[in-house]
Length: 283
Image (cartoon, rainbow, N blue to C red; front, side, top):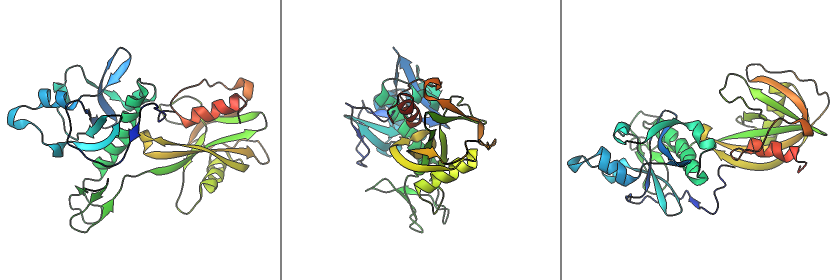
């Protein structure tokens, strides 16, 4: 999966440090990221490139313009909320989907995770309680309000990825109204007051009208594209296999025998790994 970047080491401890010239800068506009591609690999601008090309003399940015994000190996990654991207020749804004398959994987994961934090920082500029401008905390990754003392931490939404099986069959679906057109598993966000297992039962019933039993946790995955922590579950059909489709959520849902599953291995997602585990008789 995309977060599996060994032997590279991801360190999300909040330890802000002054940016160095070879550290990386992440800049986003909406859901697109500034990067360049060369020899089949992606690269982010370095601090040195940003300082040299975008600022000069008294215009040079101070440390406050660089928001510390995380560290991979010996490289720190920083977020910039304002940047004249046109001055960085060779770099272009690329849609977020590039991170699903881009190489090297640890750099793609950096962009993937940076997008998550960018969305949070952008949405937390002002206090939701009193409207005052929020300020970053010095000790932990938190935005705080100097007026009413409201504290805001990065948002992580729990969601279930659900593989419904029936002996040698698995239920695959396609989303309705989305650009992602590949087969997927059922999925849904956890609601207030329910357990993950209750989320599984409710989402399966709402999306395809089926009952399930023997719910088993498999694995989790951070998914920066939707600010989500995905938790994968396998479960078994309990009763009728007749599908009653929620057409607002799904374009289709159908049963496939293991040998007929129309999915091939991909490196990015928990969904793909769970499908392939079933296809290869590993679960």
